[in-house]
Amino acid sequence: MPSDAFLAKKTAELCREYFPGREISNLLMVRWREPWKTKLGHIRPYKNTRFGSLIEINSILADPRIPEFVLEVTLLH
Image (tube, rainbow, N blue to C red):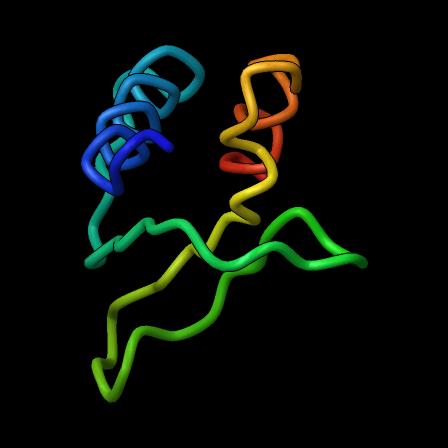
């Protein structure tokens, strides 16, 4: 499975590509999560920070048989 660092890099690349000129002004954490049966990922506040978000991605999306665009769309939901 790709690392959490891979997800962070992929997220940064997608933000630069699809939102040029916009800054990310809050803390953004991205990581893999165990497989879920009903969702591809979710976003929620990160711990007790006022300006932070945690994106957790279903680890099933790390399977090389899953098209990469599914991961990309999930990251940018």
